[in-house]
Amino acid sequence: MTIYIKNMVCPRCIRSIERLLADQDLPVKNVELGEVELFAPPDAGQLAALRQNLEAEGFELLDDRNSRLVEQVKNLIVGEIHHAAGKKTETMNFSDFLARETGHEYSQLSKLFSAVEGVTIEKYLIAQRIERVKELLVYGEQTLSEIAWQTGYSSTQHLSKQFRQVTGMTPSQFKAERPLHGRKALDAV
Image (cartoon, rainbow, N blue to C red; front, side, top):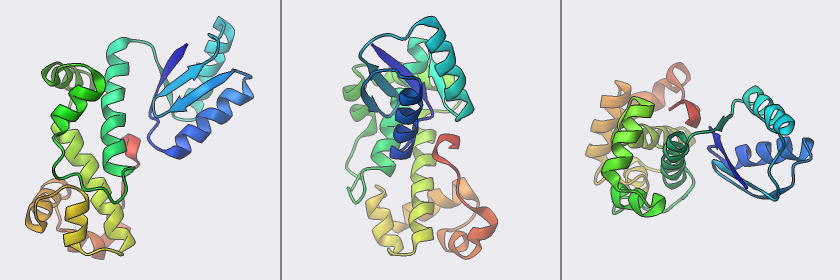
């Protein structure tokens, strides 16, 4: 049996979910971002307790198919932007990637995502990219040109323009004023 969980955005989330499931003695087969495969379905009491424990940790049990699909799209984007470290994403066509990975037409995904999240997939993708750029700027280990390449921007000018549109400042200003502006948690983007 597979259950779907909202707000799983990193390996630490996976470990947190694994701990919650172990605490409830639920037999786990596999845990991935947004999905948990159990050996046996939980009974009503276990499911209610799991829902409550998940919510206490900032997660949410997803019950309907549309919410699960939207969460899958979000997890795919987060995974490609934040967890595919060092991999160039410039040539990736996200609409084709999302359609292939979900098995749904991109136009259907786009309409559903906008209806559920109140923002387009493109804007969500841009927001995730900008958060990744912020993270890399804070580390200070790469040049802006290297960051642009790693995050899929065609040039530093394109990155800077989009960064300014989203944040209201240039990457240099962000880096200089970082303590004032900071970053967002991935599940809050």
